[in-house]
Length: 197
Image 1: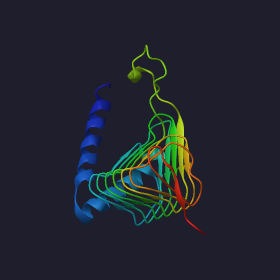
Image 2: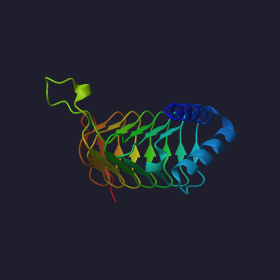
Image 3: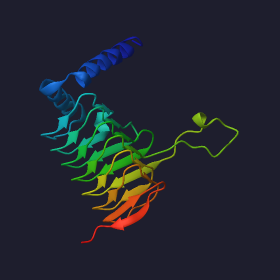
Image 4: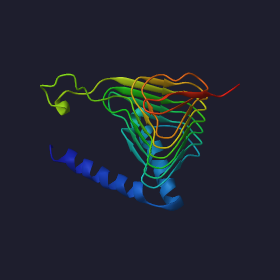
């Protein structure tokens, strides 16, 4: 009986590898069908480019009319959840990571540039006498409101809310909340402008 579980896991890994890297319209169709079935989402008209990976799909909610570029990764686990609204665009190599105990919420009409990392929790490191790898993870949450643009190579750290209509400039590291309709940049990200209403 113990042997059956590793065999099924191996078969699932091979199936997902094939689905992940099948190119073209057939690949997109396979990814859409597979992840809709696995996550029990009712999304439609999404495009999943080659290399798209969705870990623990039953805890991921995807909206419709969205684009997921080459090699995008969305990671959840048993104790975490990822929710993504409709009409969202992820460029290549975006990583959404809610492993551990975390929640990531991304609203609708959001643009996310290439190589962006959004991670809802972090490694504990307070005790210098214990290796960091053995100290576990902290809980966290990230909320990205509607109509936000996150430019290329940004990092969004735990426990941040990015207000509606904001822009995060390329290469920024967001460590705290951003007011609605703000433009932020730098490390750590600070307000550098505001979008006039």
